[in-house]
Amino acid sequence: MNAIQNPVEPFDVDSVRADFPLLMREVHDKALVYFDNANTSQKPASVIEAVDHFYRQTNANVARAVHQLGEEATAAYESARDRLARLLNASSRDEIVLTSGTTQAINLVAYSYAMPRLKAGDEILITTMEHHANIVPWQLVCERTGATLKVAPINERGELIVERFVDMLTPSVKLAGVTHVSNVLGTINPIAQLARETRRRGIPLLVDGSQATPHLPVDLRALGCDFYTVTGHKLFGPTGTGALWARKEILRDMPPLFGGGEMIREVSFEGTTFADPPHRFEAGTPNIAGFVGLAAAIDYVQGLGHARLRAYEQELLVHATQALKTIPGLRIFGEAPDKVPVISFLIDGAHAHDLATLLDHEGVAVRSGHHCAHPLMKFFGVPATVRASLAFYNTHDEIERFVAAIDKVRKLLG
Ligand code: PLP
Image 1 (tube, rainbow, N blue to C red):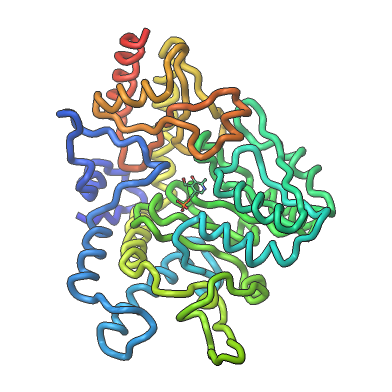
Image 2 (image 1 turned 90 degrees about the vertical axis):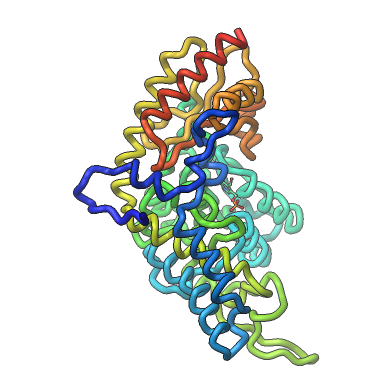
């Protein structure tokens, strides 16, 4: 079944789970509990079937052929752009650049938008809770331009200290980059509030939406930021898909980053003129089947309704947090009141990797490590955490199994 649920009915998690074939499998002879959704999410049958159907029935290159298959492939691929524009409430499909994910999207902004505008003495402002994808591109661009990176602090609960962020929006700041949702802490940042402050000062705001779209309804017109990124594989779509959104007037002012086929208007050996955005930024043959799958994933999530998913996920978050807090010696990292069901934790005396390995033997998949957030680990003074990240297809029973498994593992390690 491809669950399109009635928004007034209670969330039927069993029928939703039946849409995800992988959730039915076992690991180590135990029913799988998949709590590694912030890493990558599982795919509903409709996504798997869309990709399968594409290769069986439609496969052709996009935007190049006038034959029937080429036209069908182009329409199926381009439908992802429409779905993304609808998902984000963008004003136009032309504001959606299809990328391989958030990493490529942020690098595109760093090299095409920021680098030509930066000079020595300028600054880029980010926050302590950024993923490496929203740190390293800025460092590379700063090295090349003489600009510097500065970092707005967070508090012990894992919330951005908004007043400090605002104080740091000095005239030398030429761009601010903030994650919408922390991949480690689950914290939801107050983007609309931050965007009001950056806008007032004429500073463009980039928002890393990688962890937000799987959990929250995103309305770009209400948020008021200037750039927004999407990761398809966390949004129940295939890997190697994603997007950069930016307003048309900003995209129009950005030079291409990669040159090649499909991004040009006309090429001669004397010079080349470029296509209008978004195609100007999409050189070469894209991940066509991947975007066909992403279009199906967005239809799936929107069919369920983000508002209802969020309400159910909040129940899961409260349940899991309360249950974990009953375990002696367990410390949770990230206790912002406004968060998604992503819970990082450690247990006194146990190494994160040992915990995750033993949990795996109990059938529970979690991630351990630095989660591509070294500076955040340093802030909390730990080398690694265990992270349980839930999605709308997880259940209260799975939380009970997870907590029982932790208790067992804790006793083993103790
Ligand atoms: N930003 C955040 C907050 C993430 O969690 C991730 C993925 O782990 C990324 C960026 C990288 O995204 P992608 O896999 O689309 O390159």
